[in-house]
Structure formats: structure tokens, C-alpha cells
Length: 212
Image (cartoon, rainbow, N blue to C red; front, side):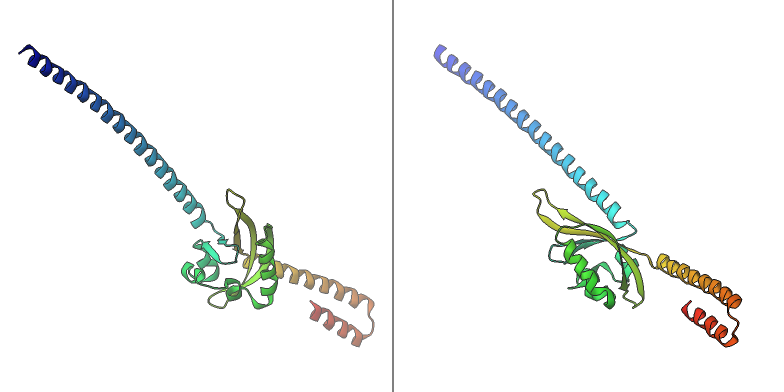
């Protein structure tokens, strides 16, 4: 009887010790999982915030922004493309050669050469050219660009920014024309004072007005 009692007591103690051990293991594992879940939640939250910040900056930038791959294809563009070109994001993304589809023919070769240089790793800004919108209206645009690299230094293409400068370009041309008119008026005044021959005076006045 004593031996049986001893055996039962030993089993009870063993069971209690095993139960305590299991509880500690479960508690430790639970704490570990909670920490991992908390870490994932923080990482996911940081990722969502990063994506939202990117969208807030990129989608609401006034200029037309593009990410162009090393082989010259558009990888991403922002909604401003529609305001600038009249094309939707989907239409532009499907273009096999967006430069040929949108750049004014007389400017196409120059802009293609610039893009080829840009894709070799250069940066630049202030390049003016003409764009043909979807509605065939020709506008003036200005482009700047910057190369993109990953963490290993491998080229990921270029990021370019294009803005519509039509109004400022037209204003610039109007100023040039007004300057030309003022110079013409000055030359005509001088001609009136100096020229005594009526026929030469008329011809000179007409020539100045034509040049203006």
C-alpha cells in the first residue's frame, strides 16, 4: 500500500511539473507570437503610410510625372497626364512609343535623342518642346529628368517631370513681338527725320512694318 501511495504521489508531482512546464511554454510562445504580430502590424502600417505618402505626393503633383524603364517604356504615370495631354493613364500606358504618339513631329528627333542620353544616366532640365494633345491641339511643354537606381546601383530608368508652359511661351512671344514693333517704330521715326525722298521713305516704312 505504501509503495502504491508513493507511486501515485510521484505521478501527481510529475503531472504538476509537466503542466507547469507546458503553461510556461504556451505563455512564452503566445508572447512571441504577439510580438511578431505587433511587429508585422507596425511594418504593415509603415508600408501603408509610405504608399499613401507616395500617392499623395505623386497623384496630386501638378506636373505630369513619369517613371520610364531603361528600355524606354512607361512604368508609371500620374493623373496629371490627362490634364496635360488629354490622354488617360490607361491610354498612355498602352502606347508602344509615347514620344512618337505625342511629341510634335518637328521636335521628335531632338526629344528622342535627349531621352536616349537621359537613359544612360544623365539628368537635365529646362528642355522646351511641343506636344500634340489627344484633341490635336499643339502645346508647349518643358521637361526635366533624373536617373533612378536601386539599392545595388542598378539603373531602374528615369523619372521625368513635364509641365505645360504654353501660356508663358505665348506671353514670351507676345513680348518679343511688342519689342519688335517698338524697334520698328523707332526706326520709322529715324527714317522720317532722315529720308527726304518720299518713295524711299514709304518703302522704308513698309519694310520696317513687315519685319516687325
